[in-house]
Length: 102
Image (cartoon, rainbow, N blue to C red):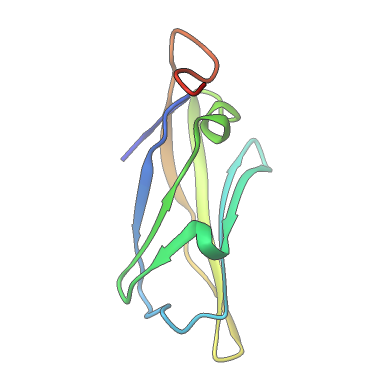
């Protein structure tokens, strides 16, 4: 899996716990030690084994070429949990900016 800047990728993450009863889930994308993208609520599709989230062109343009770290945190039954940190490559584009949405 990778993310190309300026695209609208759908990221699918395998989860170790059934999060269908989670009362809160955050998926955080960070680069250089700072949060760049954060998804929560209806932005995230949840099944017993997967979290699915789609990023917008605007969001992926906030990333720079290199590595983005991704982690999800959640609350299930009053207990807070977190995934390990995933590292995803971010690929460059030659034409910057949002395209084709008018």
